[in-house]
Image (cartoon, rainbow, N blue to C red; front, side, top):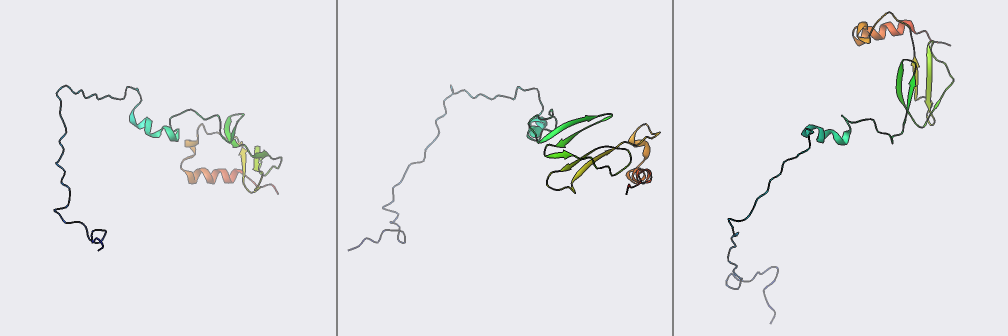
Length: 137
């Protein structure tokens, strides 16, 4: 005769094994050690470290640093310099190897302003810059 004990018919409670509950042994001689972070940086710095928010510029990036007269920037390493002059006052132009519609241009325009904030808000700044640039055809 086949046994009826199995997946559909668990054994009766009498046949089950009883296990006494365990209690953790507490010894008064156990030592609990807690340690604090001894680094002098705040927890916020550790959160932002992977994003390099407060860090120095990385040296192994796909960007090349460029320093011009009165400006500096990072140019994508795969971009090439271009001799095309689109605007008056243009001192630098780089374009993407793959897509020439992706480009970067630096235009130097003389002004009597001491700071960008002297132009006012973004709308006033753009209106004055657009007036000073005439498109070269």
